[in-house]
Image 1 (tube, rainbow, N blue to C red):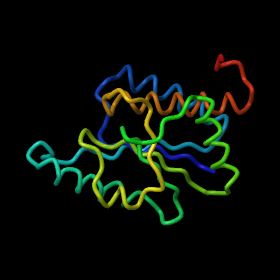
Image 2 (image 1 turned 180 degrees about the vertical axis):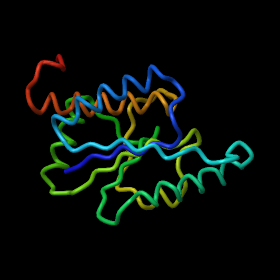
Image 3 (image 1 turned 90 degrees about the vertical axis):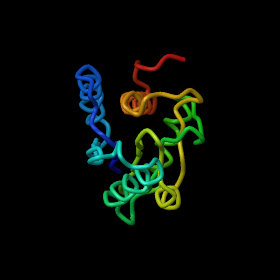
Length: 157
């Protein structure tokens, strides 16, 4: 299985980019992993919220194959403990899917078309985080999940 994290817009923070890169490298020891940044919309600030979500949705769906299993990072999604998330990952690997795609949307969330295509929604917390911070938290939790599955001493109960 491969895991792909799709994110709308580049990260402005050099420090966040460096931390994301550290966890990307760590993840490569466990699974095929890709982190894909979809560029911000041109003139996005001049678009209505609805139109921005629709245009971002088109860009997201252009990166999705019909065989991909798609989960959205959404405030209304299912919440997991780190242990439960590792079990979620194990179930996805056992199911034989080729590509698990996790999407971090833009500041307004996702279009109706993206919600209709997705296989589920995940939430990292009931709190709201910037979509730039969520990337780091998600990739770190992926790494943590694989260390839990391998009984490695990263996660402590």
